[in-house]
Amino acid sequence: MAVFPIRVFGDPVLRQPGREVTTFDPDIQKLIRDLFDTMHEAPGVGLAAPQIGVAKRVIVWEVEERSGALANARVADSRGAVEGEEGCLSLPGLAYPVVRAEWVRVEGLNEQGVAVVEAEGLEARVLQHEIDHTDGILFIDRLPQEVRREAMRRLRELAMGLPAEAQTSPRL
Ligand code: ZN
Image 1 (cartoon, rainbow, N blue to C red):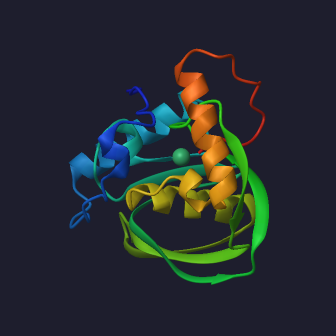
Image 2 (cartoon, protein in one colour):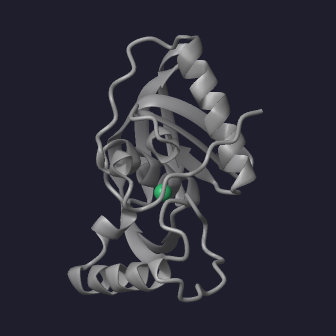
């Protein structure tokens, strides 16, 4: 069991697009175990490698009964748009409604080779959020400009030590 500190806003690794994974070697398998351990400890429902300081395109997620790990994940198809409250382990104390596709088909790699995952609802949201992390994108980038400005102000307040409200939204 290896739990890593979660990198937070301001750490440049969160803005760095992850490198593609070419083979599912033991290093990648260990990275996936570390991501699961760290996500469970947080606790969160999804985690991407840059959040533990590794600039690679690897994500894990666990939403109710459904969990998985993928390398080089990308959204191959999507349907619908739905707004839902989102939080991020790398932006502690912040939660805002974010518009995401309602349904996605994600393609990537797992130990068996090419993998396709179809998901809807919260699982679809988590996949989109984690794939964004592997592109160096944070959920605040997806907010309307006004709301994003308010989020940045809130981040500065939190950095100065102002108390955060209790967070009930899913953290990814
Ligand atoms: Zn996140």
